[in-house]
Length: 79
Length: 405
Image 1 (cartoon, chains in turn yellow, blue):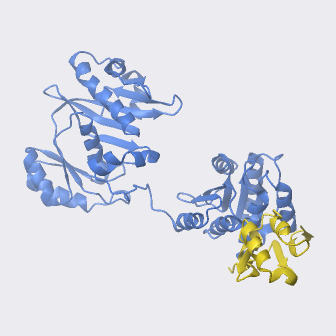
Image 2 (cartoon, each protein chain N blue to C red; image 1 turned 120 degrees about the vertical axis):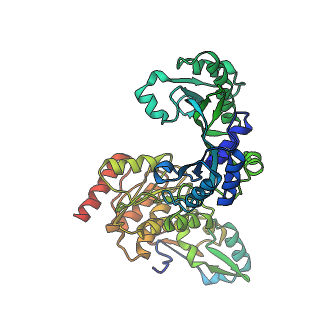
């Protein structure tokens, strides 16, 4: 009966930008389903929202290229 | 919204239609006083929102105030079809010469109110229409323009009523049609409309139903005149735990819409269905294919994964559910992949195999290719728009029947 997270999607943020306050603020602002949280200037991934990802790619555009990874676990591909 | 008889009587009275001098009472003492004030024989009627009062002993006659009080005491304790009475109505036992029927209903086909009149009152109008169609007069009235008396007169005259009876009944039917329209009723019925021995006409019983969507704009009538509390919603039945849980899941998340009903459903095939009339069509399709739905539901408006998952989990946890069918018409504003994630997640969180539990997934439309990838990954049978709703329902029924056999 336990809630399962990251069943369909996995999201990772490179450590190189995870502590960047500007990136954290931008990611929190752009994600329509609140996957990213700006935790005092650090990027935090909210696990319970990850499966809500709508594959909009806004996070990929908001962060420096190649620093945010969105993986579709059901087919093994990455956005 | 349904009304008790004493409220319907008040609505009729407010419209200027003559009624007998009645009293609504909640104690035997009040009933005694009402009977004494009326004087002479009275009838005591249980005030419940259900039929079959007479057969259940909820209507009794009394010749004296003491007898009225005794009957009221018994009736106030009498449960009828699971309903306890709100009170009793004390009514004079009228000297009736003839009983008529006057009613106004909403004609959904013509999209106008329809007046009905019969000189055979006191019995079901459906029965009269079936056995004596020439004794039922019908006439539509406008939704916009004033309702003239002559339209009511024509309706009554069609039943062969003439002379002073025609003249006395005409304003009553016309006023009933006006109150129907002004108060957003879906049904306004006086049965019987009695012609007394002195030739006068009075409404002996009335039945009113108001369009639920109009409750907000009929506050003057509901709150001021009838003093009906805002939380007195007159639900037809008590909501089940399933229905309340689904409503709570829906309320907790603004994304998309879900609804679930299971009153009267006892089947083994859970339904997660929706889209532009799809729920009704699919429920019928499942039934007509020999299936037994465990519930009715509606999902749409692009719900979140969590919301789709919540609905599916509630359906799966209902007693007797063996499999679920996830079916919708073609969707444009709901994403197929999001619903797929939701229903599969529900299965996984309940420790069930999605491939075994989801009998069929038939939601064609936005993001279907992405949805099909997810369904493939979990071995769920799915189909696109080339498979009709009827056929998809048939496949689901066959699967659940195969599982039962």
